[in-house]
Image (tube, rainbow, N blue to C red):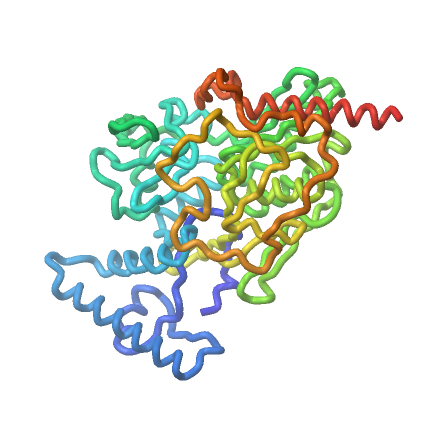
Length: 468
């Protein structure tokens, strides 16, 4: 089937499912009324391929009818079809998924930056649910939920075998209602139970403040529909607060799981005045696209340091990669997640939709970060010793990931324009450095403190060069 004209939004989100052409007898007669589609095949199908497709769809129809007739209790046809769609899409890659009408509405609300729930970014992890990151100032963050936590049960019921979309749906609910999460946390042997009260989540995706030495700090937690406007407002506030003395900026993309592609392009364009930001290449040649900066650097000449870590994914990696390739910013931290694929949200009959992986994206240097991530220019670990993780830390730890093809896998050449102090930045905190506390990040955030050192040195270097 040819879905491209029906796309709603191109994004960089988790989930999706692909519905191939449904035809054949008896499969078409059984399934077409439920799926709302007509028989179709790709134009390049050979007779042999078409015959194979008929056989597999006939098998599917036979199983469908057998379950309807003989399962221990009646099951609605709609549920059977939706379960099949869940499996079809989830088996493709970690980021394709089917959404029923309710889940689709929830996704649309979430990308708008407002929804009811707990405030947790999650992904599927070997049948369980792993926390990517809690959203700032939400029930989850206030309760101490941490990135890397594994959610094993919801209200005492295991999440094993529960599709990610269903688990997310259960964690959402009416404001004021409560839910108990059972959590497995690294270095803790006993389960942790946390009872949270749901609330309307207003995602403040951008935070900013002035640091010492007239250095601005901007944190972007998610690429929702208001990410770019939030960045622009933050820059305006920093300029005002700095009284015209904004010497440098630290841009924090750590644990930002991504979001909308158009917002990634817009945010990168806030700091790049010309050239390519990102390109995408799909299965069909006419799906390939390229996005360029529009000459609107809001901080021309102001040095930048970008913080990244293994929780920086998707849109975060597009922005970080563009700023790195253009030498507009120095990247500091740890290797990013490595999600280099684009998902297209395709509405389906009945009010649902599917998120389908339709393209890979490439940084301006032609680098595909799929299954590789972006390496920082200055590597600085969060803690003295690398901590064990229950779940995957990067894209390459997930099952059924798509391959890295079509780009330069080695990444951009090493930087030759780093400030001299870069060589003196320690790669990890000293042995006596306080353990990082997610609830109080600014008090013992070693990566941030080193980023401020680099930003200050870059500002001094820029001032000296301007004076000469």
